[in-house]
Length: 328
Length: 194
Image 1 (cartoon, each protein chain N blue to C red):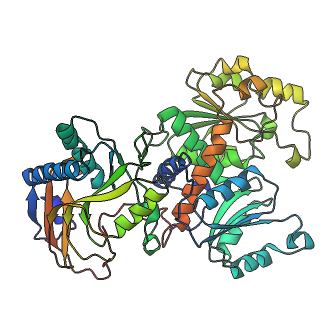
Image 2 (tube, rainbow over the protein chains, first blue to last red):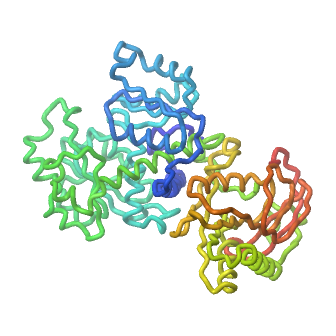
């Protein structure tokens, strides 16, 4: 039984569909005059961010607050961590404060796993991005966006992404988003193709359940969704491609390339976008681009994850999710 | 056959059959029209799963009587339950408020069985987050007693005095393939009161 969300690979198809279905109901709360549910009243969610992030942190914060949880934000800058405190001591502090869930972002791959399995804390651990490893809630919100756009918001309930062809383009090497997406989308029945210059493809990719291509133009016409990734300069300590212009010309998405995509296909980006690099302004501002939608969907997905992990006596993931009919 | 056996025990016996349910709903519809003096501001909200089907059927009956369409929707109360932490988190059902909203209207909540009253308490909380109706009333197919909260129904299909050892199961064609209310005896499993 899963109490934590560390990796998208841990989710079964049924878990993932349950999260997407739950998020669909959560999304409707956003349309109400009172965007709040009492479900997590009295529970404490700590946002433990060792790496800079605005959108993920405020997304988790909004999600927890809409469920009436108490939110404590802990960022490494200007905290005890900058004075040399270890992850263990930080965790013990949070445990002593009674955290029911810890949402952690860390620059080191595996930090959330360590936190969840070390016995330092009792609460649920949600991975909000660790190093170049995984970012499961981002993959979930991407899958949610795809299901809404490609299958339909209401018709999609209970369904996966069977047979959809998803192309992920760019800095795969440094991308936890790509890794989580490959696992999750494959679990949901989609077919994933990674496109990147050879230098930005991770070692061991042949063991991933996906195809790899070095040419964007070859796969565009066969894609239901194209996800553009940012080139993560801050993680690069060497030259991975000659010039930005060359990268942009071969792997950037412009209007001309977008025209080669099937009519129903969407363009996605986890943000932050670098206009002119991996995506042109023309594409970013077109109505096929789902960047803003992804942000809104992120809150719904994170509400669903927090609800399923914290809402009951026990996690709902991989436990029997059936609605009971007694107790009227 | 099987449906009678799963969680209603061996000796589940029908107390209401399809024609009885239809008659009861017609009567409730007439009562609503009478008490709401024409039912022009009535909004029917069913509580998932079976309350929603009952609400839709009531809306049809109301239309037959008044000649007007009655707004009908659903209200999921899962997130408002007081026993959420006693079991694993449950899957959510759909909340669907009719386009006109519920502000200033007469909301009639519709559910299949009224038992402890806790579902209705949760429904009242959920309604409060959606709007402020002029009044809220409650229609149930079966009232089996054993209230744990000061809640009563305005429209009752059938009062069914039961013991806590008995189970009441409503089956509706939309969900179960047939219409019936079954009274059974609970199998000896401890720790499931409330």
